[in-house]
Every structure is written in structure tokens, then in C-alpha cells.
Image (cartoon, rainbow, N blue to C red):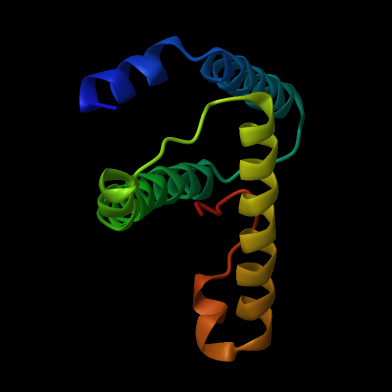
Length: 129
């Protein structure tokens, strides 16, 4: 599979349409919350809100860039050296999601057990891994 085919896969995959719909749903919920905050008499600290949003996006950009680079460096050589190709089927996706969930569970559990890794741990809203 060439780089062009990979890019085309990302552009045409139906699952990315679902991701876009979910993203728009989340943005809509945030907009509704902001409108409710404007209408409420509750005092909102907008500087804190702006700082949280900026920290979130900077964390996403740096984290995704770093993780993406590591993934490309770690996964591209085995992919190029494998003598067979894994087909893209429903079972492949199911097994991939289970493998990702399994590795995330153990990473998260390890972060809770070892204090040195606690700095990597964050609230789910800000978590980028």
C-alpha cells in the first residue's frame, strides 16, 4: 500500500464520516452549554475557559504529532517487511478496537500504580492518547 492509497483511505473511509458527525455533535453540545451560561446569572471565568481550550488544543497538536511520528517510525518498517497483507474486514476492525482497548487499559492502570507516570495521567476530556 502506497502513501497515496493510505491518504485516499482516510479521505473515503465511512468511519471518518462517523467521526465527523460525532465531532459536530460535541461542538453543538458545547455551543448549547455556552448559550445556557450566557443566559444564567452564574459568573463564568472566561479567562480560565480560554486557557483550558488553548491548553487542550496545544496538547492535542503536540501529542498527536509526537504519537503519530512514533507510530509511523515503529509501524512502517514491520509493515514494509511483512510478507502478507492483513485484509480490512469487520473482524479486523473489531480485533483492532479490542487490542487498542486492552493496551489502553494496561497503560492507564500502570499510570495509576507508578507515581512517576502519574504526570502523564489527566482528566478524560484532556487526554490525548
